[in-house]
Image (cartoon, rainbow, N blue to C red; front, top):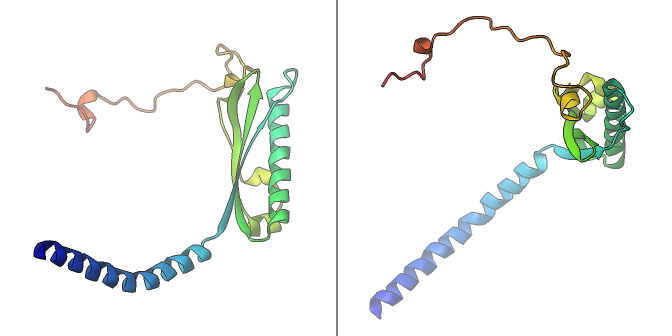
Length: 157
């Protein structure tokens, strides 16, 4: 019984000591979090017409992204950056079309989404706008020949 009482007392003392330390640490964490920029993430899926060209679909996705970013900054003045991803959905096949990360300060200076957009190269193929036999991408040619023995991960066991 004496050992049990000693363990309980020691545990109580440790927890009391930790609770005295915890509030200052917690308040520092809260201050750090409030200093972080506000980020809004937007994911949108739209279904383009199947009779559109892929270039028209990308233009439509850019327009949707631009309007969404403009609306996001207008609705919430605390947001400092928006990360947006636009996906296309054709007959249940969903593929990413573009993504962008826009800062409010950049948007106020130049509100053109095309400056910050990144495209996904194979989206047209995935959504059925191109056939796999179409040569819409340049052929890939190796820039140098690497021997297996020169590869740092090569093992000849």
